Length: 98
Picture 1 (cartoon, rainbow, N blue to C red):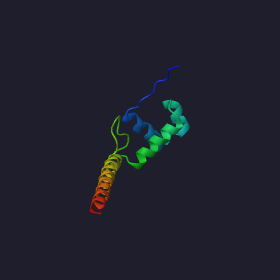
Picture 2 (cartoon, helix red, strand yellow):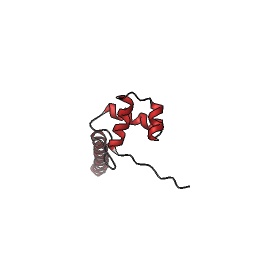
Picture 3 (cartoon, rainbow, N blue to C red):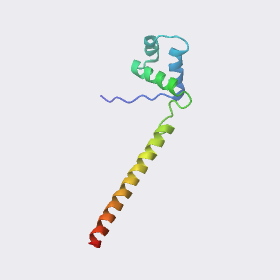
Picture 4 (spheres, helix red, strand yellow):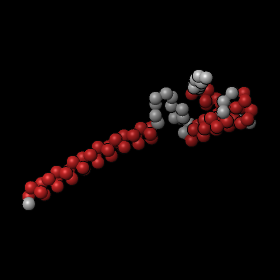
């Protein structure tokens, strides 16, 4: 059985989340009407209330905080490699001096 992953637009997610938060529709009724899982709707509500301006960035787009974390991880890897090279060079020259 081939199950395809359903994709929802940013506008749909915002409207679905606001249906529960602003209009007072129950979570159970909204999930039945929209044919989505309750956990998914909860996550949409949580994302929208946490960061409403950058919620649901879309396919292939990461949030600013995740982009910064990725850049910092890359820099840490570079600095560790640089440190290891300098340690090896220091050990090499220490042996040469003896």
